[in-house]
Length: 448
Image (cartoon, rainbow, N blue to C red):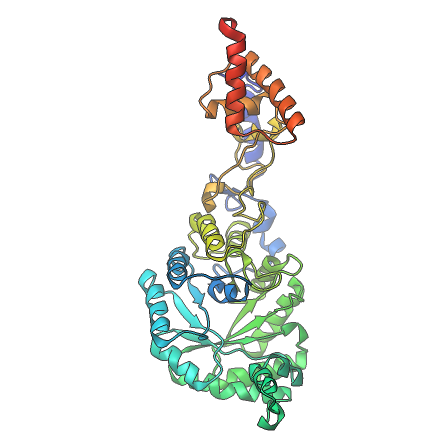
């Protein structure tokens, strides 16, 4: 059935010409996206680099998710998919419970998919840990440094182990000042550097950093040989502006050292923090698939990548068409499902309901309410049939189901469908709609 025309070809051509007059290259990429031209204006967005590195920490982060029990084979399969999606750097799980063979295998999986992908081993506390990382073939290590002074004792596992055994941990001379905390990291950084490893130093709890402590920390850690200082905001207590400020101050204090960030999504601002930090000079953003991590989670890989690519024209190297598949694989690995409207990869991220005025706009231009083309990220455009849907939406739905219709039959099916939804308090399935159409057609008989 040909649907009754709403607009003439001439009118549609004028609509498209009007839209074209409001778009500019870059902000509009036909078949890919259509965002505000303001996003690409240097006087509006500020300085942005041509590219940014996204470091995925999903495999480390899922260790903090309660109830995740994934097999080694499942993690390896997921790791291959992750690296295959264009992620340039991967933070793996830590050493706990893994022997040297497991570490070597992990590196082989990463390098087998992309030899240029940087493999980083986190949570190393001794020179022996660093030697294991180097011998297994990792490109680099993360040597975490607590962001406080004496209060850093809260985060020392040995303190809890000794206290549990009835021992006085204080006699071991734990670091009690900020200077002592930093001093404990220096030999580890130097040893890792001497082993030829890329040394990344996550500075934790950066929301508690004062300007003075930041300067002291940067000076000590860079002198020891840190190649990158990563600003970790576990509580998610930094605003985008505050993150940008810390990045800029760190860059000023250590112009020859890379700066990264690890934002958390306490206020739904993790992607915003990433943007602000990169604008201020950050070199790398640490994040995870589906935002997995403890608490409110990290910046989401898909949302962050597409924000940089689409809004700002910053290359991430990510194979964007694999993002939704990667998100689904993350759900299977962890058992943690994302919200239906999760940005970019949610099952209904590209669903705007069933009103005719929404479902029919794609015939004029598919990048109106959906500023992203769903297939660009491996997702799909969802067009539901709802109580608000009209005959045009229903006609499209029935045609997709292979049902031969007429305007009169569509009107009758629409009446019956609305009555059924009101009576049953639910949306109808495709099978329900097809059955109603057959029923109405049979009752109409030859007169149809």
